[in-house]
Image 1 (cartoon, rainbow, N blue to C red):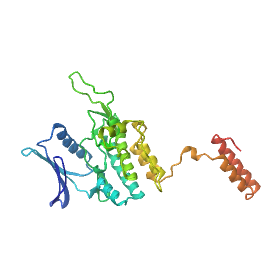
Image 2: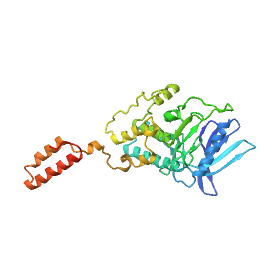
Image 3: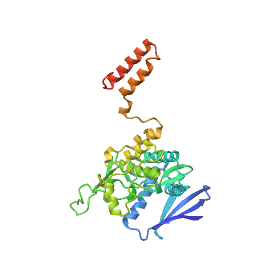
Image 4: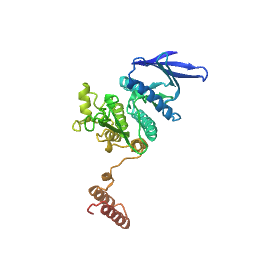
Length: 328
């Protein structure tokens, strides 16, 4: 029906399936000039999507076919309304995004990524363009560089850096010990990534939703950008905005911790107070402040009966002792 988009050797068209009475998207990939890695990526995407069919947060794969005589790959996919990258561009131009919309899209992304992590898959290229809006719901697309994790493992080793610079996690950039080779002279996989790599990428998107820019977006030179991402001494700025939600900022900070072991899991993020709406209070904030309590008791002394005031004072003394504070 029309061309939806193009990039590299791919073209995506809108089409109408008369038999199923549904509008679809057909990706036409010219493999004639594709190298081995590119071809493997297209095959990997089909395998991953086939594995994930039936999940309502993953784009639907209707069919696929490789025409050897033309060296063309056709992939028929569910057609969405738009992608998150296009929405963000619209919002940045018109400044229409609201705190409620940020929380909605964040929750949608978490549910989508939770599915693939539960199925043992690391996406490795989480970015706004890979979230498709379908009937109000965000669905994950583009599994070309995704990896499956063995059931008894939590991470995988890869040969080289993969992903989109602005959303790549520190560990997906750094070689563990520099290039390593086997007895045959072949380079060994030397970059270790885990499900937490996707969490970093999600944190970058949430940063963009909140601040309208990327955490390292001001650095234009690719090499300097990668160095900043991996440099623990390069601070990430979290400026306070008008009507700023401090709970939201705490989520972004948690996702953008350079040590992947210290980052929350997707399950942790779904249970976070920012998503659930439950109040998040630090442990030290739960403790009763002695000075404030003494002032409160002084104000109540003339209001409460002697017996009630005595019991209130005793209750405070008990709380203060349990909190390790010196009773007054």
